[in-house]
Image 1 (cartoon, helix red, strand yellow):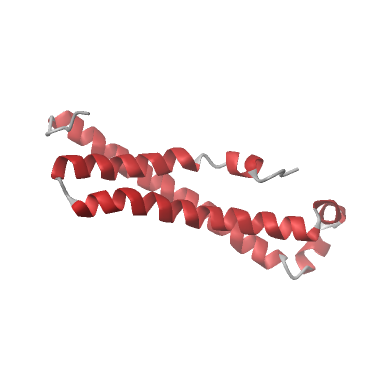
Image 2 (cartoon, rainbow, N blue to C red):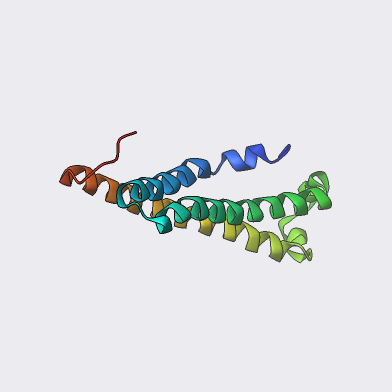
Length: 126
């Protein structure tokens, strides 16, 4: 069902969010000539991507180790008694939290970019 994880990863369009985060800090660094913003342009998307992938890869590993067919045969009550159930819930919640935080960050950054554009502040051209 999950193949190599691409189906699960496609449900969360995080790569677009990572690009917006990188673009925001890179654009800011080009205008301000700030080393700090250049570093943030690389570090922020890498950290958020690594954190998000950690949760998804962990979920995939647990499901593959337990066997998806065996897990499908279990009732909800039986599944809840398995030792890995709590870990799955934690990993799934972690992926959801990272997604929500990234979406909020994306909205904040896009609003800042919109304000810059409306004010006609100095823009760097490529």
